[in-house]
Length: 350
Image (cartoon, rainbow, N blue to C red; front, top):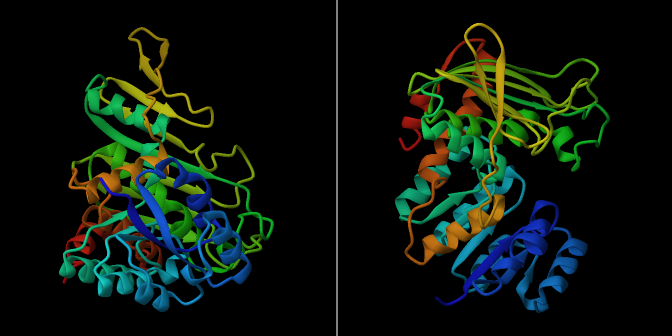
């Protein structure tokens, strides 16, 4: 198959990782033919790394979409600018590979959803945590049926970001709903992935403790009922003073009919079974080792899809259900009541 031409929207931060780490393994399958960023120094550094001519580097997104002939675009910029990029892609009829979340508001996410579907375009949303080796392993245990039916799933993220600027880019300390938009969008999707169901209803709260130095909400506690009868709970903290379960070290546990399975900071998946008469057995599960992990898995999947391969799991039509969880959580906290997340997702295209 011919190499796919990519218009890359974003050059710094996470986009820098895409350019320097995630794309190079696919050099025989894709090439970046245009690059957009609003920061001149970032655009210059990434453009030099890619060997792009100055005429292929843009500070203005619209000019890039108008000038560059590409086979798809990659959207790796802050969520508040996703809608602008996607609408340009729709106008040019370019397939889209986008970082999560779909957008920074539910209204913007719905507008993206409607526009992309109306245009008949392919769009995949990055949910890289599904495809890390420990989570592939835990999911395999749950799908094997060895532990029987799932009762409930618990997820925990905890990081000490109490010092201003500790969470990398400053915008995370300035934005509203910070931990939900930048964090729980991963973790809610994982609860869907592990439970095997979509979120039906959600209740809980987000808040910012008085000692936080940031503007947005850095703490979350939520409970969920999934479409298949499984229940779930989520603890998220950006002000954690105790044991840390930060990025790629989150704690997940599934309580099941014939035991439990969990993973945490050491990345080792373990099965626990209580023996009648007392005692607990622990079994360490051999880790699944896929050809690609995380972002690489998704980029490979997307390129294969463009070439006529199978539809990936995290396409727009599926990921709108995770996005509904994110904005359903915001509404549940705002209203102090249970929110119909399934209804939100089902009505996204209306």
